[in-house]
Image (cartoon, rainbow, N blue to C red):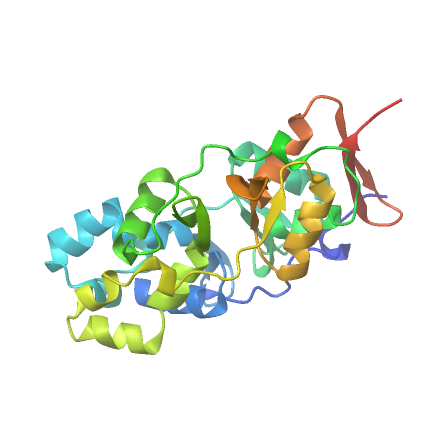
Length: 302
């Protein structure tokens, strides 16, 4: 017996957001931002998977390289016109996918090997029936004592911005550094954290899109990050067990925790850190319990 994707308490069936492959970039922004998801499958009229758009692709379009190449170069900086007139095929990528009959081990291996955060789940005719993300997978580790401390897998080289830095600066940094979260620090005090979901949720608001349509880009792009940030910021000390950190993420529906030492920010631990780094810690083994449909991961001690 194997742990099939369709039988596990992971994933979302059907996905929160699915967009026709003939859509405009604006349609994907609205679907992604208002549903607060990071990946949107693109389908044809039969529901067959034709591609995927990620939040990172959208932020790059709004404030990164593609912003310069498309929004500025082709649309003279008119963000709304670029969103409304650019086809989504410009942003899409051909995603790896799994079948409903695929097992959990295959899902994990594919995510780790390809460095991707979500997989479309399809039936035998390649019609999209669900989506499974790294958050869904690591949630199975909640309340599991791993005997691994957060500081062993956390990301130490964190990019911080000031609370008053602009939305445009935040999008530029996210795009250039390929990161999804920006802690906001004033001195050594943590004032908030801006996630890629916060950014897209804000830009996709009706009132914000209306300002962009009017041509008031600066009114939107100059918005201080602190005004769209997630607060309060959840943090854990660096000697906390990874399993407890995952439990906190699951409880609050978030994908990262700021890591502190004596109350001072020292790093960040994310869903991706847990998925990719935990199995590589010396002495750690990952077990899939098929009877209880649970993941057990931790340092083996004798």
